[in-house]
Amino acid sequence: MEIELADAVAALRDELIAAASRDVDPRVSFTVGPIELELAVELKRDVSAKAGFKAWVVTGEAKAGLAQTRTHKVKVQLTAKDAEGADLLVHGRADRPVGPGDTSGRVQD
Image (cartoon, rainbow, N blue to C red):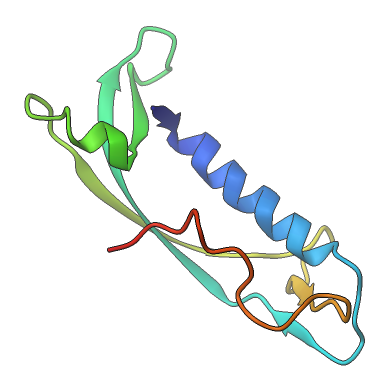
């Protein structure tokens, strides 16, 4: 599976927006601090890209078939802000059970 770097960052943004817009529990809120995102990417020549290359995030299933390509580690630090430029707040939900929730899709190291 190929995921463009821009799509990976957009997916993270969407998840943060979803977390911030959940039902508000006034007892608990968190300020989103610096977000460090580290991805393995592969650069591919692309005639439609302005620079001639696109960065694709390498997924776990794609790593097995990368014997002939080189991947690069990209690490970026992001700080989430709301539309007014203030720190993004993520609120808890009172109706949610305690615990991490469903972790069946979690990637194991």
